[in-house]
Length: 142
Image (cartoon, rainbow, N blue to C red; front, top):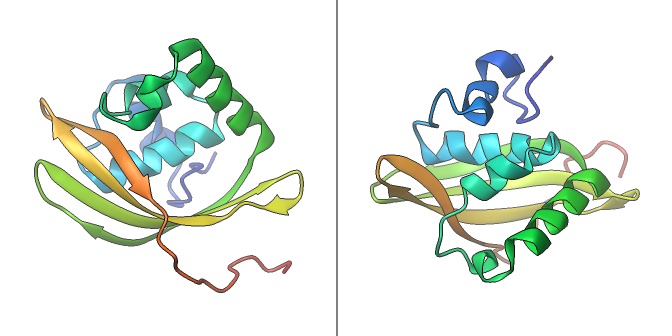
């Protein structure tokens, strides 16, 4: 099966080792792709485990966060991922991406500039901001 991160690689050779915990994503970009794939596949524990402790969602009780992530995964069609740019650095890296999503037939696509922090040799998602960027549709049905 092709990987849900839209890398065009087989899942087993792309995000599966990260989801299984046998490999750590070597870059923030790889972590971002694996998180997108994690959402698409309902890998709630992976999403929680790769979120930085300082992320604002960590103020929400874990059971409530888990339910929110599960609901988002179940209600969303993950239709595409485009990496627009990445700035590699340590301890922080940034990835700008476009996620193409729909929920109940409604376009939920967005662009985000994500910040990742490297903690004890491991990349974690710290925060994201959605810039006011106008993009043309990348979906053929609109």
